[in-house]
Amino acid sequence: MKKVIKGLTACLFAVFAFSMFAGTAKASAATITELNITSPLTEVNAGQLNSYSASATTEHVSVEDYGSNTIWVYWPENGDSWHAFGGETPTAVDDGVTRYGVRLKLDTDEDYEIAESPSIVFNNSNITESQYTVFNKYDWGGYLFIGLGLVSHTDQTEQTFNLTFDFNGGATFGGQGVIVKENMVSFAPALNDAFLVSCFAEDLETHDCYPIEIVKGKVLDYVTVNGERYEVNVDDGFMFNQDTTIVYYWADMDLEEYEASDGQGNSVVFEEEEGHEYTFEVKKYSFTMTDEELEAAEISPEDYEAGKAAVMALTNEYGETIAFFEFEIYDENGRYIDQGPFEISIPFTDDMAGYELYQLVYVNMDDEENPYVEEPINLTLVDGFLVGSVPHFSGFALVGGDVPKAPDTGVLTTTAKSATILPMGFCFCYLFAFAIGFIVVMKSEINKQ
Image (cartoon, rainbow, N blue to C red; front, top):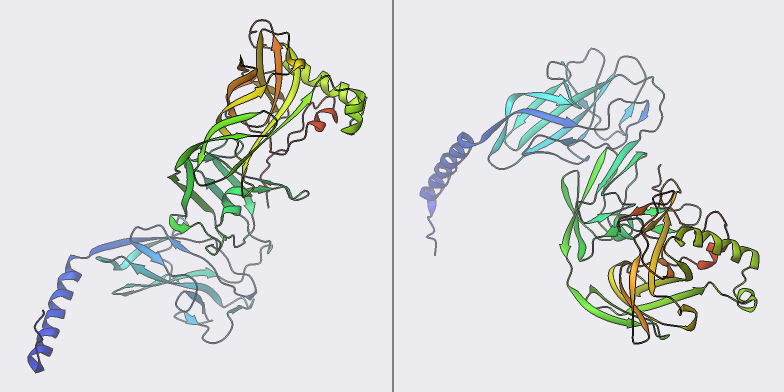
């Protein structure tokens, strides 16, 4: 128990103790001699002055958000100091004499203080010697006044900024680990799953969403926005009104082994996040479809033959194309699982007979719309099933041959398994819609604003 000191003695002791420890703390505080401030705000246009943002790149110094202390100020004609607008709406008048600026409330970390007359660097320019640069020191930090000049007469076009997404080794988008969206106007994004993960890019015409490809076993934990930590939820967000970098930080996911079947004899074994129910679907499109089957599928014989020829041209170096498969796994929330490895088992049917070697070949188009194939995946015939390990899921051509063939070194190229994966829900009928296209790839293009 602490003893309670009563009366005048207690008061004197408290005052003495406060003075002693305050003096000690002040004496030991580290002094900050230079303030580096950045802001997208570089000039003032006539009219109402809206909220702005600024940040300190000096360690142990932070800028209070726009509000009661971080405000607009003006310097009147023949004035000798900055004035606040008080209760009036901050408005800039193009009178040729009144200057406008900002007052920033700067806070320092514990055991740090700002010097009486620090150097001031604003957007990489030293403005210390300007008569309109004023710093008022306080124990908690201080007020910094920065002048922006008279009303600007430049074209008052809307400012744009760059938004950088750094996936930090835990994901890619279009095979890239860092994505920059350039020349975007200000907006207030919510830091939720849709903006950061599941609808990272959206086709404005079709409203199709394209997710980032997260490394298997990783789950997004939190992000930082220009170095400040934010949680990923529906309510958290920030104002994008300056060049901004969002860095992703990941946690390890608890994985569990699953086995799923489509009810038609196809099955798969894979590892994925525990605690879910997964559905496996397989669509098989034979290369020996009858006229009746084509009519039922609403595919014209001309499109069918053209599509077959295009696909075969891509895979004939490996053998004869037998069929086209599309594999899909999704959980109870409709989230598609496309990262393997997947140990698949396909029923061996009569139309597959007659070959010594069976392979699955993934075909796609790159960003320049050049076709390519990945290394064929060998399948083994075991007890009436073709089995093998697939690195990712999407559309594959089943090819039968006599002996393995080396990849062609001509027009087609072979890529690593980091290639862009076809969007789930791809329909085989698209193969027959374009003879020269052979396959439709819904490109994941980042919207530029």
